[in-house]
Image (cartoon, rainbow, N blue to C red; front, top):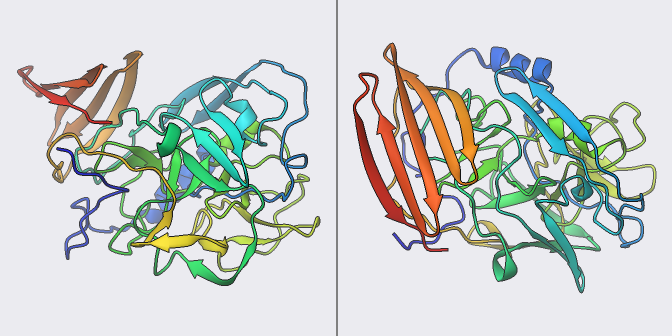
Length: 358
């Protein structure tokens, strides 16, 4: 299965995850509000034009910062502040590597968040999160000195293929709309953190991970759009209430520099590219490529993902309910091999093994 992809969902008449948009969207949105998770998913871009103003200058410190969310479990992240790291990413310096390459920021990660995943999804395509090789030539790159575009690109009608932003925890952020143009959140496709796994079993957000505000600290971005402009949470960088936003979920700040915001209503993240970008085949270029390593997952109608656990490095287990039964899927990654063990409601098991090509 060597096909490369930047995020494949079928653009057919059927919903790409086999689940129609249903009523009750207010309840899900309220869940995110109460839990402090913002479904504002998109990578937010850097709002500074010089490296000195966009990097952390604090001395190196380490602290445990707990974050909780309704139904999503808890996460305790070592918030390590390191000097000369692009603001926001400093909280994840242990797992995300950031470097300057000419006029580009280069960000390397494995695309896996420090929080739990998948719990809360009610429209599931049977894809499972696995680490991705976002390193070297396949790392994320975006402008260090972004410039406003003469003609912005709206995500309402474009950019359905691939990431449009990168969260500071190293997780890509995709268009809030799926490939059919439906709101992925309202369709029940997203977990309690605003993300899910795509065709290549690549985890990514479709809504802004507002919980990151508590980790990165006041005045720092929670993501960067791939045009280079920063994405902040639901307050201004100085902590004041968020000002009116344009149709791309951004505005010019008091410093005269444009930035985006994550919000709890559509478009949740940056609603497009206010800055200059190159668009090729409906995706922003450059950006990483992922490789599916197993056959397409299929919609599992009526399934609700109820749990996700990490049993150790590269060892995961997902629990879901279906027709009154409880099922489990465990997968272990060893080198290029991924072994899945499926446990049915009656306790019977079966195993599959696949070989990845990074």
